[in-house]
Image (cartoon, rainbow, N blue to C red; front, side, top):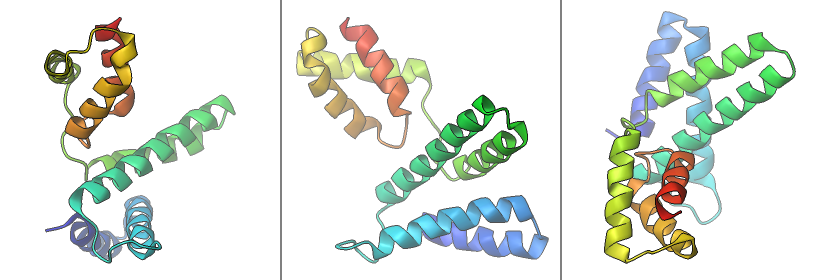
Length: 149
């Protein structure tokens, strides 16, 4: 079952259960999927990796908004954004731990023959391809910097 179908099923369940907050987050996911499907040059069916990328983008947007709301002393709006992010994250595959990411990055560095910060772009390219949807890009970048320094 694709993420789109799963979201549609959960949308129906949330509507029947009258879960207003969950409904809002799920509608945002469905809206993003529909927009991606109708983009110019897009396929009418999204691939799984595209759906995961959209879900990650939605989570990142919610977390960034939450941080901005906290800076502006609006904790109630920040909590709402974090709650929506948590609901959206449930659709993402399990994220890798820092140790697991570190071991993958070490292997990539060894395989590619990278020797310093000058090779960071090459290592990041390989790492983001392999870890797409499995780890946060910011964490991967930090680990790559640390290991190449």
